[in-house]
Length: 84
Image 1 (cartoon, rainbow, N blue to C red):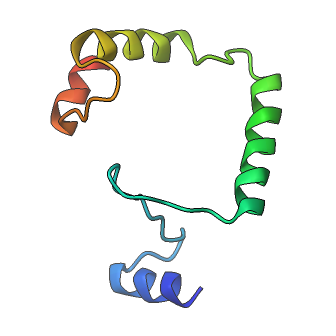
Image 2 (image 1 turned 90 degrees about the horizontal axis):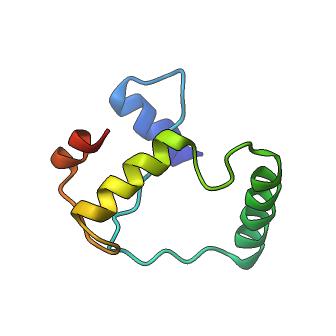
């Protein structure tokens, strides 16, 4: 909580909380109970969504990404907009 408050003060943001995005090449270890809860939430969401494998637009974008870069490739962010 203190880190969020400090970062919000530095950035001048007051309406939303700080969000952190780990780098793709970092190792993140979650406590087991957090991972279990995330798994249950994802399972519930996948049962009620009309597109359990992604929306048609997402599937199309994913197909074009895989055709261009292949699975496991780190793609330049500036090029990803071309796929949308």
